[in-house]
Length: 116
Length: 116
DNA sequence: GGTAAATATTTACACCCATCGATGTCTATG
DNA sequence: CATAGACATCGATGGGTGTAAATATTTACC
Image 1 (tube, protein in one colour):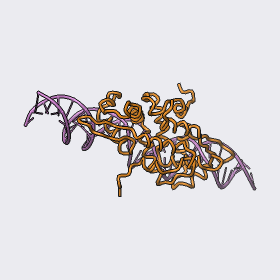
Image 2 (spheres, chains in turn orange, red, green, purple):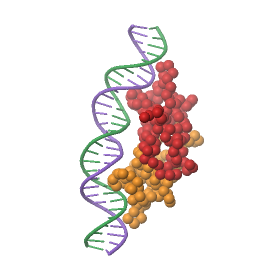
Image 3 (cartoon, chains in turn yellow, cyan, blue, purple):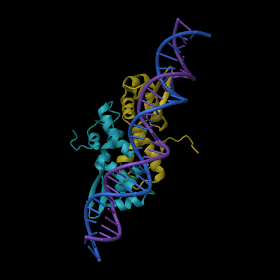
Image 4 (tube, chains in turn yellow, cyan, brown, green):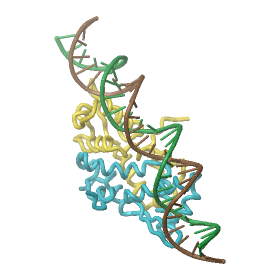
């Protein structure tokens, strides 16, 4: 059963790619996170949020950065949130998304790391 | 025109996600690499090759690690090769794939890095 | 309570993609 | 040259996915 664990938590506790062959189960989880980043719009969204002052950004700001419909941006943000790469906080009418930098760090270590 | 540049080379010369908003053009290139890793089979293939002794692995070894047809594995290897994550070398009847560790390092820096 | 703004959800659709069977290519060997 | 093995390519197909229009939900404010 699902205990509310996000795919990024699977990334947190796995060896680097070059360390040992990744198991099928782990690969299944990790690939979900990489697939979330494997889209130009979501990649820009992550970068926009992560590089924004205060480490967070309002959806209204994000919508303006793209030539896409509001539901489409909302869809991408939801996906990034579900895999655990973005935190969501509602303040009044606005919704702010914050990048989980430690999740990005774990992912980076998993891809390029050499230590255990 | 295409000068033979692989998507991983676009990753090599771009700032970290958290440093500044990624442009649409760069995101388009980088997402290709992440999409290549965003598949459980290809993720395991990269890990198998990267963690293999000598940093390379024969296709025959890789085929046996999966419950998939040989054409399917060949397809995934070709994709990883095209984006620049795997090097390909034919020696006799066998084909050996080698992981581009510096490409993995650049990708990791792009995701989790903080410096310019 | 009514209205407007911000964001999410639903529904539908066109397109991409992982997979496999069949076949092709290349190399070594007898 | 014929055969066998290793690997790639082709064609087809079923499931996944990005997108938008329409609609719903939530919040603030008059």
